[in-house]
Image (cartoon, rainbow, N blue to C red; front, side, top):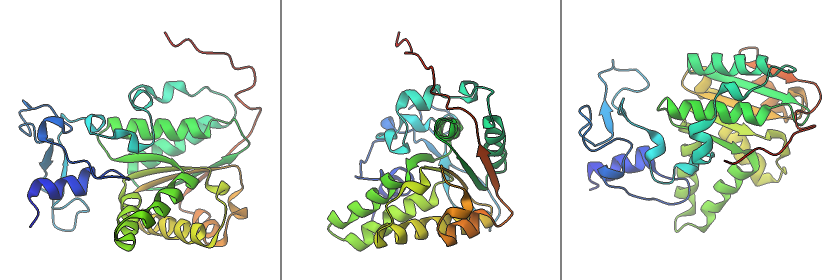
Length: 258
């Protein structure tokens, strides 16, 4: 039988690629925390039926970025600590995208689909959303669609490929906030198409139950996507923002690293 520490490590802190157990001293909170005693997780009294009923949550004094392998959230540690909405310039339609993302994050459920030409700030907006969510002590991740499918495909190298594939799919499915970039750049092999459908269909159902936020970005109009995905994005309950204008990369200069 697994110890409670092993179970919590698997449920709350399992990396995408490998299992890295950690002692309480390396958890998401300090050892002398008066709320959790250094354990890093607390239980909240909630009514039966609440989505978080019976689950441990990160300590109010905790910091998800203290966890081992925090890069599995798709951002560098610097990005996760530094990026905020002040980095978004008031140009084109990007502020409409920011407002749509912030609204979804505030209500804690829904989809937002950003689309338009290159250089409109879509990726930046997704990364800021994830950085802000992590700093608010909610699990979240930024990923490109191709990278996510490759992560799922890597399950074939495991001792039990079927179980590992389902574990990985559940990890992506259960994230409270997931930002998927370049949704339309996936090479549509039979396997890739199946995994894309499974993940997005599960997250769509979660959004309808008001349990998660999914942020999507692409260069393609939603009605040009595969039928099942277009149908979900265009169902009238989610935000769609088209970004237009000249690329923000035109005329960019080197930034000082000091």
